[in-house]
Length: 176
View 1 (tube, rainbow, N blue to C red):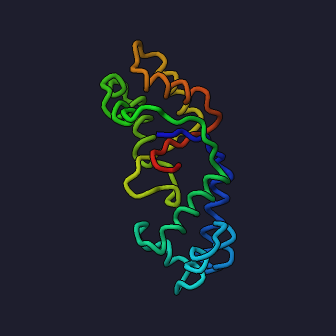
View 2 (spheres, rainbow, N blue to C red):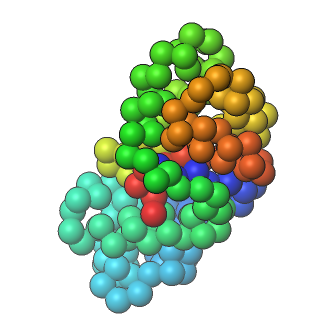
């Protein structure tokens, strides 16, 4: 899992530009916004409507490069990689570590990082785990984790990364 600092204004702006281009069927704007070239650009230009490309499943081969470009464009505009876990067990620890479930607010904040809350559709991937927290919630969770004695190493590393983050955060297991 990776933790990203998010520029919420830039993310909202990106989403508004994308929405406007799709509503107005401005294919050139979609191509420019996503920096599409070659077959991916042609896929958007040749679809009955630009939005049709995004209504297809991500696994639909002609649409896949467009989805990859979409996430790359949104991430480069609004997200900064803050930390990536070395541990494959981090998600399971966050979901199932009993001590995290004892406090309702701590559990709510952990769940917000895992259940897709606050993550726009264009940053979600099929089957991924993702979520977001505002700056105050991220730092409150970091403090709550730091207050727990004898944390497993992956949770201690996660708590440090959360505490070091500036602003709101996104957690994602498949964005990179």
